[in-house]
Structure formats: C-alpha cells, structure tokens
Length: 298
Image (cartoon, rainbow, N blue to C red):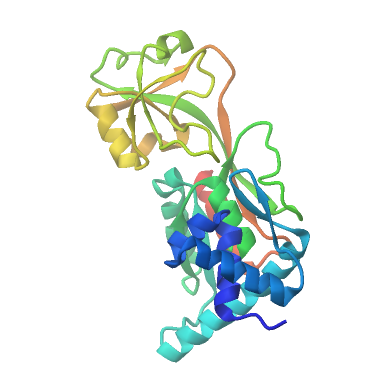
C-alpha cells in the first residue's frame, strides 16, 4: 500500500470524529478535501474503509484492522518530530481523555497522587463527551479515557473488539440548588417538585442525552440555561437562577451557596465511572493511572 502520512491522519481523524464535516473542521480542510483523501486511502488499500450511517460514518471491518497500524505509524512520526525539535520526553507518556466534570475533582487529584508516586510519567489530558472520547481511544489519539456509564451498563460502543473497561467508582446523582433559595433548607425533593424548577443543562448533542436535568423526570424539563462549564453552572445555581444534576462526589468542591438534595421518589439514579482502553496487556503506566484514579475515588 502506498498511503501518505496525511492520508493516515485523515483516516484516524475520521474514525475519531465520526463525520467528514467534523474532520474537515479539525484539520482545516474542506469537506470535499476530506472525501478525496478518504477515497485515495481506500484506493491504496484496495478496499472500502468507511460505511455511511445516519449522522456520519463508521469503520468497516477492514478499516478497523488498518486503524491500529495507522495509529502506530503516526505515533512514531510524532515521536520523531519531538526528538528532532528537542522536546522529546524521557519517561513514559499517557494521553488521557476525561468526561467534562471529571476535570473538577477526580482527574486532577488522581494526577497529583500519580505524580508523587511516578514522577517519571508524563500525562496530557483532553476533555470531551463520552462517545467522542471512546472514538478517540479506538482511533489511537488517546491511550485511555475516563468516561461514564449508565445502567444497564452496556458496551461503550458497537465496534469490535470490545474495549478493555475498568470500573473506577460508582456515584449517585443529586440535585444542586441554591442554599438561599426556596429549596435551600431541604434535605430532599420529589420529582413532581422538580418539574416546577428551571434547569441548567449542558448543550444537547445527538450522541448524548440531555445532561443536567434529572434523568427520570415525569415530563419535559423547563430548560432555562445551557452551559457546559461546571463553574458557570455552579454560579447560576448559587445565584438562584436554576437547579442542575451533579454527582455526589462533587460535594466537597461546590461553592458555599450550593446545596445537594436527594430525590426521594423514582428510581435511584447512579453512574459508573470507568477507564477504557484498547485491549491487550495493560501498560504499566496505565496500570499506575488506574490505581491512582481508584485511590482518589475511594
């Protein structure tokens, strides 16, 4: 096969982004340019590498077999560039992805603990939605990702082979309200009462359900504010402008003006925090990361 380096990068980016449009935006190409690059790679590989599906594209079995080779080649090219520029690191490196609120508590504390035990490890991080992070670890852009799973905890995606998944923690969900507001002196609330609240939610995506509103509300929530950043959400809650759903393990980083309430009726809402990586023997650096995350979560 005679595949260019730019062709391999496009292959990995399309596998990670899931659409030609998102890949074009990430790489600074036009969508037609991405289509031509993919066609050139498929011609060189003598097979179709992507299938079109509603909302984007997915790898064919042949594409899934080629992708790990492309990732290794690109990693070696990137390492060579770092060596030539004098920025190559001497210790093991981990590229870690994390879901958005993991950056508020879990991951920073785990990295601090890991740094004390393994100062030789170099860790870089990237935030993203759980589906996007799963695609990135499959594409080889990330070595491991910290994502959430909701009951009944099905596989993280429909691709094959399954990713290796390690449970980090089980967390319950609670409702964050203003301490000075009408619910501020309560310990708990019902779902019917929550229907009257103004909700602060994350931006809606086709690949993820609405994040921030209570998952089992008996009706459509009244969405008042849309924000991804946790500091923005907590400031809106503190000001009495709405309520939002948070994991119980966020309690010790909440502002003084925010209280957490249990929801007394309906199903118990919980999430599982997991670390996902490609299968095979676990790298010692990744194993140390898992230990640090579990120790922090515990």
